Image: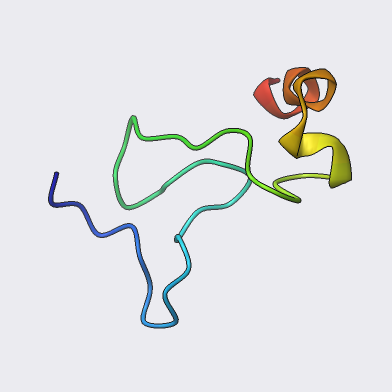
Length: 49
């Protein structure tokens, strides 16, 4: 997959899991995606909404 998802600093270019530069590509379960609980199963529901 050759999509521009990594910035010059080496971090993913996403905001709350949504990758603007690659429509249809999403991340989930990232540490502090939205809150501390984003990386555990109970916190994924809030991020998904």
